[in-house]
Every structure is written in C-alpha cells, then in structure tokens.
Amino acid sequence: MSSYLTATVPGTGGTIKESPEDFLVEEIPLYTPCGEGEHLYVQVEKEGVTTHDLLHQLSRALKVKEREIGYAGLKDARARTRQTVSFCGVRPEQVMALELENIRILDARFHRNKLRLGHLAGNRFTIRVRQVVAGALDHARDTLRLLQQVGVPNRFGEQRYGVLGNSHLVGRALLRRDFADAVRLIIGDPTQITNERWRAAAECFVGGDLEGALAAFPGRFRDERTMLRALLEGRSAEQAIMGYPRKMLRLYLSACQSHLFDRIVALRLASLDILWNGDLAYKHDNGACFIVQDAAVEQPRADRLEVSPSGPMFGYKMTGAQGQMGILEQNLLDKEGLTLESFRLPDGLGMEGERRALRVPIGLAEARQEENDLLLSFALPRGSYATSVLREIMKTEDAC
Image (tube, rainbow, N blue to C red; front, side):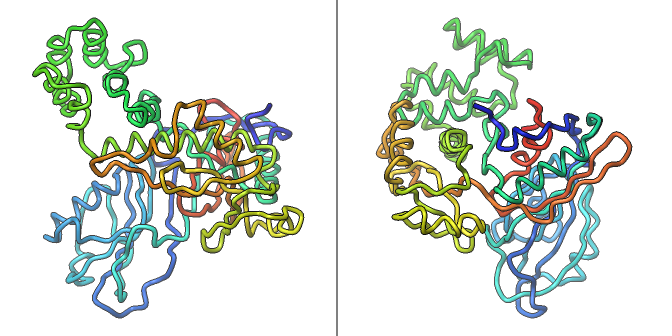
C-alpha cells in the first residue's frame, strides 16, 4: 500500500533549508480590524523567533503583562512568519516605534475585541525547495492539481513527536499508567541521542546509575534532573512523573492523540474523499460533525469538498464513528492497549477528545521554478500542516 495519496505522480525530490529564508508563513485572519475599539491589532513579521519569544519581547518592550497579549496561532522559529497580536491600552505610535531584533512591525489598527487563539482562517505558505530533480515543476503542478481535487491528507507528521521521535510513546505510557516506562522514554534511548552529555546520562540511567545520570545531564535539562532527584529520594515513578511540568505532560498526551490520528489517515488514505456509512462527516464551514446514514446521498457534498470523513482525536468524551470506520477506530485502540476511559487522567491531564477532518482543502496553490529550485505557495486551514503538502510533492523521507 502506498503511503502517498498522489503516488501516481513522481516526486520532485529536493531539500528545504533549516533556516527561515526558505519558509514564509502568513496568517490568514478570520476577520480584519475595523479601525475602532480599545484593542490594538498589530501585524508583525518575525524571523527565527517563536511566538512565545515574540510575546515575551513585546511584553518587556511595552511593559504589559504577557498573558494580556492576544494571538490567534502559534508559529515556530524555523520560518519567517507574519502574524497578528493584540494589546489593550497601547497606542499605535508606541508599537510602530519599537526596534526589536528579528521582529518588524508592519501595521497597527484598532478593533473591538481581543484577539484569541483560533481567531484564524488559516495560513498561507511560500516555500523554496532546493536542488529538485529534472521535471520537478510538472510533477509539482500535477500533484497540486490532484490535491485540489481530492484534498490534502490532514496528517500531523513527524514534527509532532519531539527530537527523539518518541513523544507519542511517552504519551501512550502515561495513558497506560506505565509511569516507569514514561520515565525511561523521557530520559531517552542512548542509541538515538547525539548530544554527548545527554547520551552519557541516558547510558547511566539504563545501567541503573541514577546518581551518575543526574551528574551527567546538562544543566539545561532541568525537568529531567528534577525527575531523577525525585527517584533518588525514593519517590515512585508516578510521583516523579507527576512532578514534571503539566504543559510538557499534555504535549506528550497530545502527541499520542496525533499519532493515533495519523494511523487512521494512513488506513483511510485510498478513500479520504469517499464517505462510508457510519462515518462522522466533518463540515468544513463550521467544524460540526454528523453521522452518515446514506453515503450515496451525502457523497456529492464530499465531491465538492464541503464535507469529509473525520478521524478520532481520542478522548473520554469523543464520539466514535459507526460501521466499518467505528471498527477501525476500536481496533486501533485495542492494539494500543487503550480505551476512551484511558484518557480520563487526573490532575488536569484528562483529554476530552474531538473529531478532526481526515483531509482538508488546499487553496491558492502555485508552483514555479527558479534555476534548480522550486517555489511553492498554497493556503491551508488553521491546524493543518504544510509538511503534509510537501510530503506529497517531494516524496522524500525528510520532507515530513
């Protein structure tokens, strides 16, 4: 079974630099500021700076509390990004006068409400793929045409699984209440670690030398060191894990959700655009879902990309599909040794779950060539990843 939706089209090959110059991301706003109100919407361009770093710098420069700054979505540092943030009690001239490293203020206009997470229609991407194969432009255009017709597999991809690629396994261990395994996975497999001191610490841990592991870990691994100290003090693996920052534990659990969803995408790859009886169909205009009672009746809406089959972001409140899709979802949970109740964790770690479209529409898709490079541009709805499109176009292992 092919792992590509567009397997009939050859890949372009090529590489993308691990630098912001090859990757531009622009937010597509859900609405534009009206010009009046008490909230100042500020459009910024940043390079090599995460959204959290951006908020921190703006907070210090404008002397406002970081939690009072509104934003619609998170952007990482490995791109040049244009996004909007909002402030209350700040004047345009204050913002326009700022001079911050790798941050440029583009515009400032008032609006009536604070900008909040999710107030975003999507993102527009412009990406340079370097050193592509002969015929790459035709391959890219053919792939984009197919994706426009069928939709883009709504994968999360490998970037979700951490530097060791095992964040989802940590999450699964937490869901299984196997806290000793979670500790082991967080410390890491020495054979997968390139940092010398981290690898030495992991080797000590595997050998049962907790004191040696603690001494070897670099100082910046504060959370891992705290966990090891708890074990050395005689606390249980569960107690040591629950001392880990809640934010990180939720990231591990979210990674497990994402991995399970990606497995369902792979199982449905040949029928992402086909509704089955019992599917929970996802309505792209508002995110609502409904049970497909008669697939033949609903299929024309899927053909117009108005609705799509949905997959599980498993959680204790999630509604499962019925029919054949329900069997796929239950079989996957069974293989992982999980149930929906597994996601009902204590201490604010419970995951309620939701449905997510198995495919998404792609808009404004273009490809052009500059010498041996391809320039790709396209738009995706919020919560979807450019790596899913690049994977289909490039068809290389490192495209995702």
